[in-house]
Amino acid sequence: MALFVVRRDSVLDTGEAWRRLTVWERHADVVPLTRITVVEGAGDGVGTVFVARSGVGALAFDDPMEVAVWRPPLGERAGFCRLVKRGSFVTGWAEIEVRPGAGGGSRVVWREELRVWGVPRVFDPLVGWVARRVFGRAVRRLLALP
Image (cartoon, rainbow, N blue to C red; front, side, top):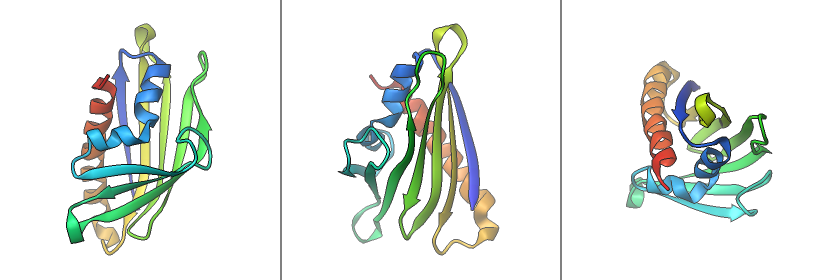
């Protein structure tokens, strides 16, 4: 599996950064050729299931994810969310941590381990490098959107 980590500092307070990162449908605004649909739950708690559909036509795939841990930030306590990827094409997990940062802002750490079906493990470093760039850009853009 390819493991990668993205770290971003933001001027947003922890509550607002958390909101921007965990309204799942917003990810479709920053990840090309992707739609997000919440299929179970309200979107903001353990047991929520959502599906990211990426690609075009016959070259599209579903990436279903379930929220396994949901702890929004509270005061000085960091927010933490763990997603478990339940698909047949992409498996693994993702963790989103939002903690207080410098000057009233926040620090975001996105950790993810993923495995892409049919891609030999020898390519894990490449998969991780590409994923880190894609998710790094997505996190930056989500934090910039109102």
